[in-house]
Image (cartoon, rainbow, N blue to C red; front, side, top):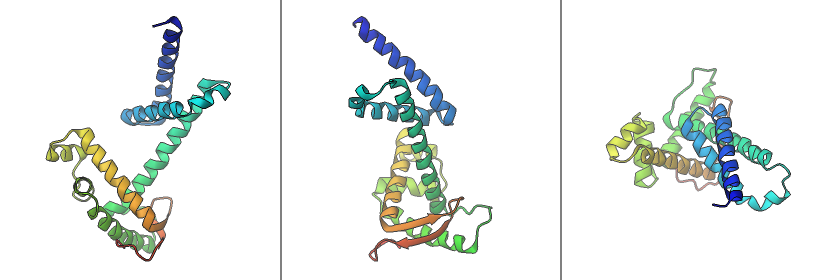
Amino acid sequence: MRKKDEELYYDVNELRQSLLKYIKGKVRSNNDAEDILQDVFLKVQKNKANIKNVKNIESWIFVITRNSIIDYYKKKRMDSRLINLVTQKEETHNVSKNSVNLNKEISKCIKNMVYSLPEIYKEAIVEVEYKDHSQVELASMLNISLSGAKSRVQRGREKVKNILLQCCQIETDYYGNVVNFTHKTNKCKFC
């Protein structure tokens, strides 16, 4: 390896450590922090043509990192709202009777969406969300790795979310309770 290549490798490796430390300070899960870091490096790679216009590359990469962390929390908030709807867990907050009724109504639609998924995703969602098995138990039941089980659950949730967002316009309160929803089309086969 040439000396310049070695310096570049060292800088990237040192930056990697700084970024990972920064991400871990903002995200609880080490696995999620590693995923975010990989996402950052993918975004940097995709946008490397813009690097020549950047005055401070390290700052630019930290901005990408900050935005990736924000995206992570946006996705996590949407996923947790979906999980609350799927599992019908009512919060002990001040929930209006209307919100509870709308949660129940939309959860029926979501259950239909879950049962329309391909078998591997349907089975993962049903076992984890409806039968309250952990993802570790799911992995054991299906004789697959834990990461494989997590992947199936995550992909299943994402598929349900996409179906739901194609079908309905949903408004939620601060706690994730459905306060209003309308169908985007009259031809929704789930609701």
